[in-house]
Length: 126
Length: 382
Image 1 (cartoon, rainbow over the protein chains, first blue to last red):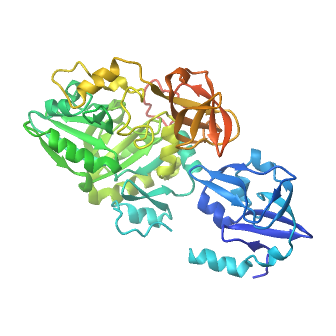
Image 2 (image 1 turned 60 degrees about the vertical axis):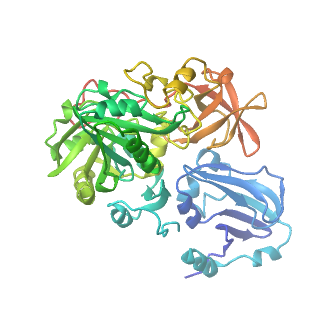
Image 3 (image 1 turned 90 degrees about the horizontal axis):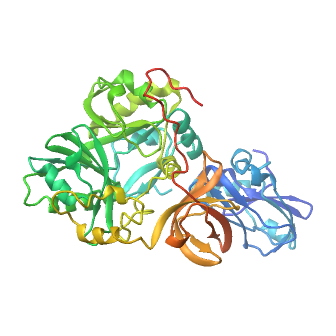
């Protein structure tokens, strides 16, 4: 299978890099486990996030799940479409269901994340 | 993930749920399906067409004998003696101090035979308490919880799906009524009760026939939009319908008056009953706190345990909350101090440290459009 270029965290978030900007979302595995997403709370643009800091919340009908910054940096964009259509997190988690974009302060953090194969292994073990 | 705990009970239908790829969770000591395809889809199916639920985890307690009515009247807060044969009433088992041990439905099957249906998590406690309270009466308790499968079919299309399978005249079976007959050839009790705010039925059969009943209903309903529904949809459906859930709105520290269920307590019935003194004194004063509905007008979903604020000060606690699939807005139930309980009052719910606006509204959040009579033609979806 061709690489997606994405990296992943054990919290089931994905990171895609474009220059020094990381786009972040939840994986299809996370979306499936949560069930129907009905509410997404995201940070304001301009906020600086430490690595592992809580930056938002995804809520399904039954569950509340925190979002953790996989990498440190400044929030340069938040996906406003999720306010009106939180279900995008289920229907298109790697596309229009993305959550935020962060301008990374330490590019080395990206390499510390799991690649496709490692993440597949993790979700298989669950 | 969490479905490998050996101490959990399974219903006769658990393998059916596995085959349907349900997500199974612990609930009340049982391994139960929380969802199949998705809570929202299942919720909408029940509001618009029909849903099929396995409720075999509920407790079924049969009380027989010449004193059965008197014994139950002395044990519960309601008066089952006033029930006509074939009718049902919502009731509660309370402690001496008036606290709610469980909420129940009592069905009168014959003059001297009743069925009490208890919540799964409380079934043993209710069974033990009833056995205790029946002592000295000429009445026998038969706990058939582990001998009974209970399947509910709920939604506007439910009657049309069930009708060809049963010899019971469904059109004559009123809301909160029960009849004995057959369903798909099996001896069954069919009750027109439910926990969804829709028309629907609860079908009791022998434990081992649960899968056969489920299969017959699923096949009969497959062309009419019937889908299997889990506890997740059951919870959002009952919350929209303003129905309390034991463990959330009701518990040992709550009396029926605080929960807005004082009408269920029959203080003036003949003979005394457990909790009477405490409940009479609770009835004589305004409860300090009241169960209310909240429409969350700000952004966020209120959940069980979140504080309710007025002017920044805590005045209550959320008992249940969700995004209402039907209304498309977050709703909640909460206990609040009586000074803040009037519909129209603007309060706030503290969600992750932030106050989010909420308005007190009257319950239920959702009320189905009642049909003039249960019709025999296919129900039109609005």
